[in-house]
Length: 219
Image 1 (cartoon, one colour):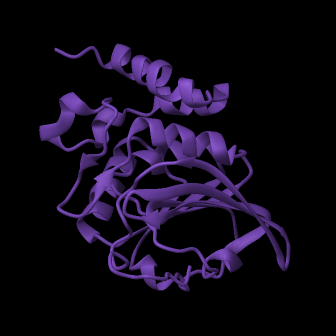
Image 2 (spheres, rainbow, N blue to C red; image 1 turned 90 degrees about the vertical axis):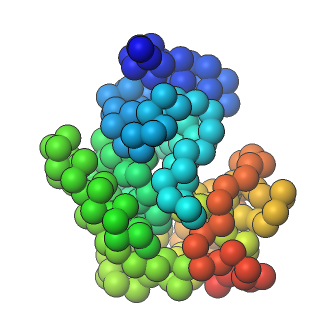
């Protein structure tokens, strides 16, 4: 029988911290959110392994290491609002909800979105709004602006489609590239018309559904 608490501690100490560590608030959010609860039943024993866990034929749960690096890079504050593209299992959504004012999360797969919603209700998480839709075509169903945008998949090429959803001072986490060459980046909105891009690390993520064969994504 796996010791869940020890496995969670090991994942944080051995997978996440060596990549740059976490502040105590993000650390506590990871510790306090039951990752195993969001993992498909047949993969429960792999809940804290350093792998992407399959959710469907086309979608995967991010590895703990990447989730930790996303949190490190974004340094989310309690008064901030977050837009997440790709609810997936709902685990990272739940962690984000503990760090910010509210999360709006978009998922193309209605079954995954419903499953996540049920888990949020069971855990009494009430600052998450779920949307079902295809974010590969952009996202125009909200008039809100956000402080943080998290893209949970890779995109072939960044151009500019979601940028207008950011408040000044806001930032986007996204992995850009194709094949074996992908780079995680933070894009910060410095002013109404000025942006700064910082490359963080090399990695590989599943490409956003709808963009698998796209040479250039109008992002």
